[in-house]
Image 1: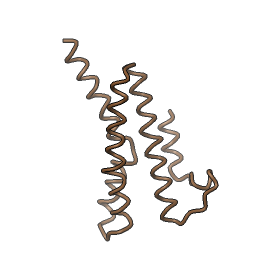
Image 2: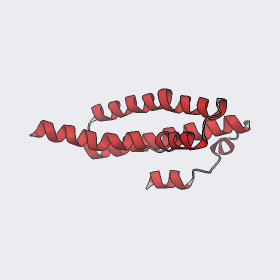
Image 3: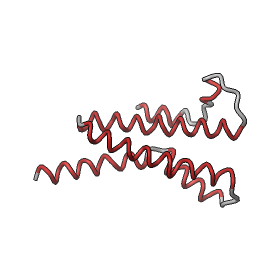
Image 4: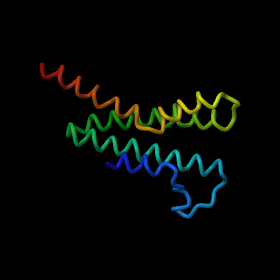
Length: 118
């Protein structure tokens, strides 16, 4: 439910909510970074609720860190400092900002647990 709320509020300017007056570029970066962190942390809560094991949450945090440093930051660089086709950047946006990578962890954890039990 909360992931849906974040999705519906994707056009919300979080930086103005916190009282920041930023340039358009910095506002974009702040809003997308915050949405990324909110989405991924909500998925971490789902992972903990499903499996009740901290090791899976720690693994999720590693994936979140990887996504932040190796996907989100390069996305911003491509978005603002290259003339790359808008469709490629849009695809990267969907992959990074939406919790796609984190949601893929849930079936992977389930399969790993299923293999260990059998």
